[in-house]
Image (tube, rainbow, N blue to C red; front, side, top):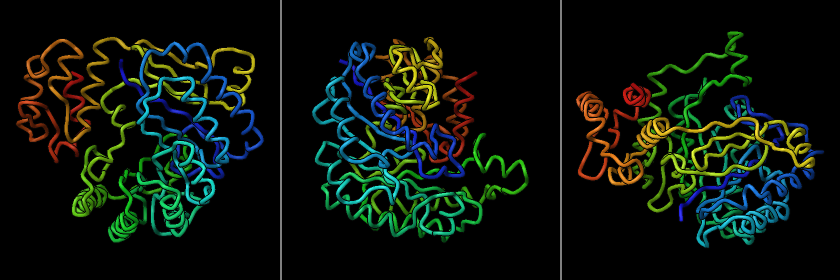
Length: 378
């Protein structure tokens, strides 16, 4: 039986971060209970009951899932397990912003079956947290990690951001040093991108936002890799690092262009060669669920050539690259034969390498992902 991921979206936040273009909203706490009821009904629909696959990972993201109380989140997990064929050893993750969960809530989550916690640290310096629009302080990250460990969590991840205007190389290295000092097992390090619809995008249009110099941003990236690897965190994807055995199973499924079901407002799915997205509006989502109407806002069929390209584009973000055997089993042809010229051109440029088992990006290739993708798009 094929394996898929299950993503559940919680679109509520205390405050919208200035870089965030995700489907999340503030000031709508009065809708939280109705949203939970709607989400439960979506999980219980016939559409999901007909999914013929094993769920190997569940990820509750947002927004801020931990704005909800532990009992409510435990109930959603219980419904998910009843509605889907969830593996007994599934990776079950939840995102948590510091300041939104205490030890009682974390203990309830762990006792209910959650086994991975992803904490949004972003930066260690409070002035950078203020600039990003975060609501927490660095000390609250420390509290959250300590409480999580006391509750039983072993698999703890942190998200951090580099390339923030005003951030120095010393700031960045202090953030990494602080994060790993708490014995976390996984770290996601993202370069700040200015996305349309964000506060930073508006500031940039107004001339109030100056992006970091490319050379400094690249220095942060490479110095960060060296530091993390010296602390036992192996880079397994462009932006992700883990202690051996703690790679994110849920995200690996995305990068291998695997299938997944998304529930909740703004959630996306990719299943049986169809990609779909739910409506983003919380109010409209609740209304449609209550009226037993479809919450799908967009749907498209993914043809074979698109699937091939996306598998290449995503798989070559992984340090391990693309398995030649897995690719041949999936698509029925030999990767290195059909794309021999493209692979050879990229190999000569020092962007790709290969061995008998796989084709994978070099360290230089990680800096030129768009160039690699465009080569295969041709």
